[in-house]
Length: 158
Image (cartoon, rainbow, N blue to C red):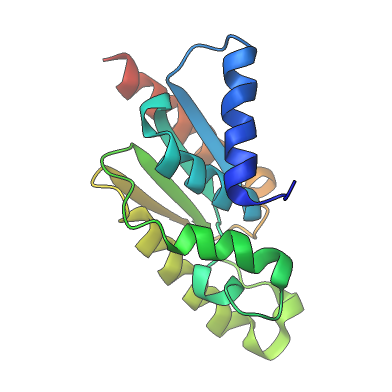
């Protein structure tokens, strides 16, 4: 305790070491889990072959005081200035979330733009927009994710 992003990334690092899983790893995170993966990459870049983020939340959206449990994680993530040259792929969904009602289209455009900004945090970053996918990319576009991870592991093997 406390359950901060830094604490969770430290725990993941210990878990991977204790499990004797050899690095480098490809780390994949969806939505809020992408923030923890992002923090892990910023803290332990030498452990990673690459990072795949699936529709990570836009940091300006979640960094408000309205969601204090998310604010601390977002504040830690917004402090990251660069991921160096980590192989990074950010995959964003294109379909607006109908739960956002009248703001759905504008919010989706904002989210996509912010995901593209995150992809530029690495000099080896790529942005992929899956226009026909909802936020559940792993259901709607698993082949895109598999291809991204496969390409990343292929590149690492070189």
